[in-house]
Length: 335
Figure 1 (cartoon, one colour):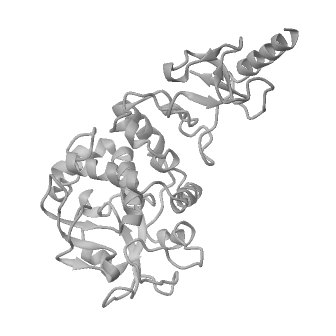
Figure 2 (cartoon, rainbow, N blue to C red; figure 1 turned 45 degrees about the horizontal axis):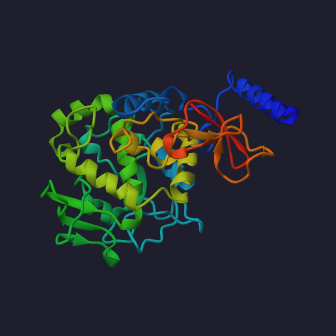
């Protein structure tokens, strides 16, 4: 009994010692997302906007150098998400004239610049939506929205990217469809754009008609209904990859802001989806409200069940009340 009381005292002391210090977010984000903690739905989107909008602004020419850090394949070649045959060398194959796919790469605004007025900063040089892509395929994409299509207008080599009439319910205009392996990347890019620039969305919608297939003219949801549903499905079908997380860290080191939809896989569900009533937790506990306080093993209850500090078993499905618990030999907190 004395041993149990001693353990309980240590647990309570450890918990109280956590109060003045802040938990850490994913990757190297630290407390970057702390101001969004506890928010959900439209309020979460606005809180994230206030965090990620601030950055070190790049010049358009600096992007060529930035891409060497953000978009290099393991072999050092340009990581092109529009073409399956390109094999570009940084600098050597940069910009210039092209006659066909595989000739040169350029700077692609995946969220077309015509949708926000052209060379308007900070959107114009925001690395979070700019990628090096095949110049010819980029030109065929033009400023059409993303969508699904049979590709009757154009297909890049190996049918990697396609252009044609939209086959996704809710829109019938011409769209550009990227390869399946990058659909989640572009979905999370668009989630970033309508979050980071939410205050500008009504103006973009009013002034630039080409944006209206994608935007809805409001700060929330921000995306048109068909586009939102399609991008949510893309994000689910193509989860966050190591390419994205590494790129996110690289952009952070250059531009000093992050894409939260990469840092928190599934975050979009807390803003637009079936979890938008659940508070976001920047320390990573946003799935179920239970998170690890410490990795130090405890000597009691190693069977994986949840117990309170008096050793009584807790029914996990009933959602434990706020407090400190032990599960699988580790301490947990429910906030």
